[in-house]
Image (cartoon, rainbow, N blue to C red; front, side, top):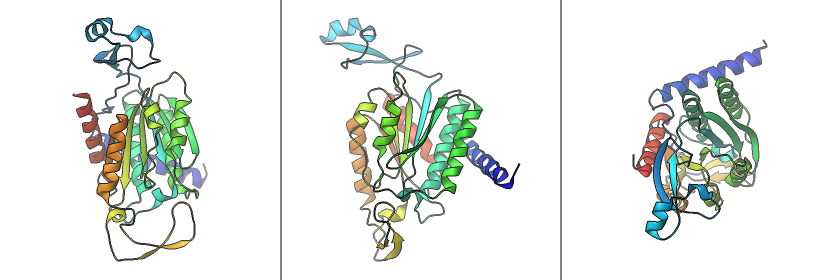
Length: 292
């Protein structure tokens, strides 16, 4: 075994240990989902959406309300988890102990380990203005190792320049898996306010959560000017002033508004916040949304 491979395996193991420490603070597989399944646990009756199978119609509720309703269920076993990670250049920036990308990798690793421990199928993709790595959902520890290996390599390789990050390419890649339903975690800094309208389409079939990671300095006004390279678009040297991204309140209000419009859960977390605490907060939001 050469030194490069030994180093890779060591870093994968180190990432797994960090993720395992985070998972110990969570309930394994505690990402409650609204994916509609054929059984296990009844969730609610809701209005019929054109294109859904007729066999799901709740005829008693339909007769009582005067328009079609369907029964929905919570699917809790052998779920398929898809982690979509933004690796655009802006994610590699940060003025805390770690960059946004480093925190995002730990977050993705924690979700991946939690999925594997719960016996769920794990899928993974990376994107910026296009999809780079795409691994369809599979079960087992080999899939966990492949995912952690990809995450380690994300940190080793500098992000490629791109005009703008575009989550639509990730959503379109997931939608190509016809007939499947996923629990999707989309991790990004959304620095371009790039919450696509396509979310309303993917939300009809999949359970989607957005995880917004930010560095506090991005949203803290200051007279200080720092030399920096533009993370996306023009790669020339420029001057950066903390707070130029706008206010954190404006960004979170924007994300909240867009997610509420599409019926999506989102969490906005600082890179100074522990990953385990951020995920606990996100899962509590999902639990509240389901009324559990």
